[in-house]
Image: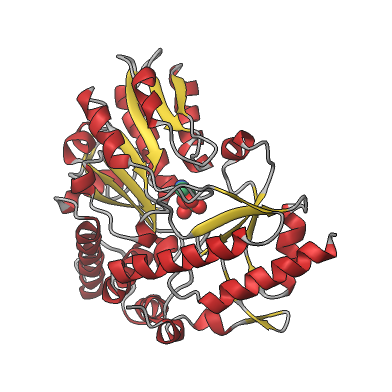
Amino acid sequence: MIDVLNIRKDFPILNTTVYGNPLIYLDNAATAQKPECVIQTVDELYRTCNANIHRGVHFMSEQCTEKYEQSREKVRRFINAEKKSEIIFTSGTTGSINMVACSFGERFVSAGDEIIISEMEHHSNIVPWQLLCERKNAVLKIISFDDNGILRIDLLDSLINEHTKIIAVTHASNVLGTINPVREIIAKAHLYNIPVLVDGAQAVPHGNVDVRDLDCDFYTFSGHKIYAPTGIGILYGKEKLLEQMPPYQGGGDMISTVTFDKTTYAQLPLKFEAGTLNFIDAIALGAAIDYVNNTGRQNIFEYEQKLLDYATQKLASIEGLKIYGEANKKVALVSFLLKNIHHLDTGMILDKKGIAVRTGTLCAEPLLTHFTQTGLVRASFAFYNTFDEIDALCENLEKISLMFK
Ligand code: PLP
């Protein structure tokens, strides 16, 4: 059970006022707020335990290294990966996908090969593959979705062929909210020995993710969307694939020995962790994971689903409001347009009431093109949001609707 009033006390920023109104933060899909324990972890580390990891023999360096590696173990358990060596710290989902597109692409993709992504991807799971296709003269193919926002996986068979080298698909859409049947997609891809990358940026914050159950080959997510600091993220990769992939970047920590003739590389996962990593925030990611585990991922899922149902019903009852994304299984977000009112107008007026929503292309222009739209309004929820906040959103939308009569 979520005791939302108590939970809200853990997030100091929720006491903020905006233009004299209490903040109603409904932009959690863009970035989530941080609980006190995460803020304190960062603060304490800089005050008491800040030394570069994996390098020093001195006390503090060893302490920091230990905490960093403990955090890696927490991430491993969080997504049920088999080995710690399969967990790579990155800068975020975008960093993780770029790493795979470059390194996997370098090793496995050649001219004429094909990569499949979906029509509902965030730009971060489109552009790295486009760049790879440009470099390698490969071809990008697209799985479309229907007007309810459901992926046409019935089309997958017609897209896969002997040239397909990888499929990259989002676990949950940041615009439609759709939770995709990634397990099914992976099972199908594996029949053809095609690896699958899952973009988990919007799925990990909202429920349980088990990479072994999914049997995905790569899984990516961002710390800042699961209550950890910005600038830290995760790439999970199956060891047998990561072993075959060349390093993404060169520099400290990813080497074994360096001479001017030849450099040999460190074992996994360090092979993919060049330079001074963001170790402070990696440790704070561990604190965020502890917080989420203590709150209970099933509790979070159930509470957020109630928020989603309530918001969907209330929003749908507003005259002239159209919701984009009507799949049965959704994460807790709703994208919409109110009559023919420009999304920026809606967003800016809500802002003046202290209500933070996202507006614009939502980093998914091809998805919006499907609906011949150039922008939407998105309200996205976390387990510290309340039903009253949804009421306030809807009341203000009713008022905006009258203003533009
Ligand atoms: N993928 C999806 C589905 C997202 O929603 C986002 C961010 O909103 C990203 C990727 C990119 O995440 P980041 O900016 O943290 O790298």
